[in-house]
Image (cartoon, rainbow, N blue to C red; front, side):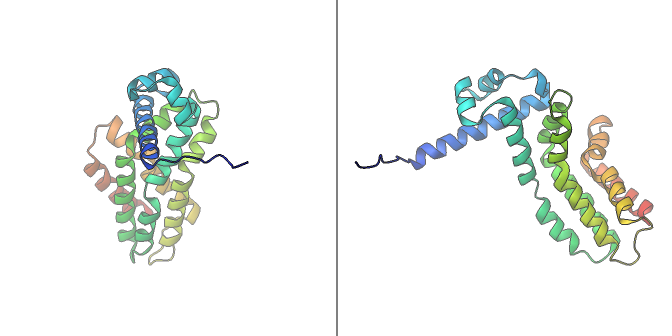
Length: 203
């Protein structure tokens, strides 16, 4: 007996991918605006202009959607390319300038994603694990930056681990959000301030 042929249509696959992308975009905006706990799958479906069953079939449950947002946000952050550029810098000032510019780019470009994740933490059953997953590569990148600073002259007056903590304090998502959202600073002003603070405090 002949096996059943699986039909694959590039147009159908493209349409399905576009639907998934739209669902994730609308879910991200809703989570960032209202908070994860106040958004239902029906809300996401309505915003995307599809049926709730389409959301489940395309992306999964609300928790699945948030997981996808985290994974795609990390992948889209561009941290690997930014780190390649940073590690190539020959002076402490150039490293910190690249770090300020790179983390500003990531936080500004991924702002809605960060807000969606941050507002999910209080109501998500595994909020701490979610945050660790969302920020692990970010923290690793800052640790690599601290190690690189210690190969340059002069080295920081803090240990590698202490320098990593300070870089996270200045250039982590909370630092950027405090200045730009809570204090209404421009991204340009925040970038310049964080760079100068890092230079003045690290050495």
